[in-house]
Amino acid sequence: MQRELDLTRLIADLQARSIVHHHILMQLVRREADASGDTRKYLSVLTDDLTRITDQSLPLEDTRAAAMSLREYLDDFLVRAGR
Image (cartoon, rainbow, N blue to C red; front, top):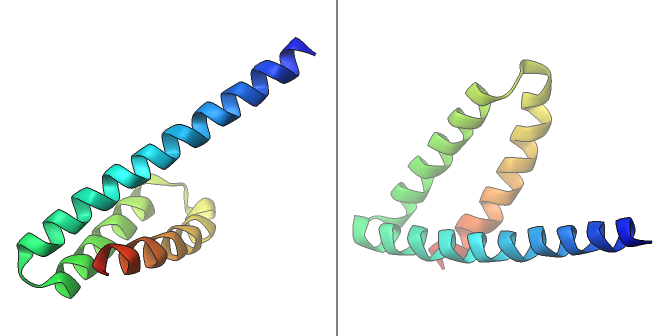
């Protein structure tokens, strides 16, 4: 029972940290995109860079699934960041 409780707390902690990190990143991306003078270009370059980093960081067999997941996340994230 205690193990299940510890696991539930760990999951809740990770979720809370993820939300905070997401919020911080959104604010930073918005600030940088606004400062760039060309939000669309900034977000496009950022997406390309992050996709490249993911491709280089993962084993080949994992790259396609991760890239699809990352792309979906980035599309949603960058649409909201770009307003």
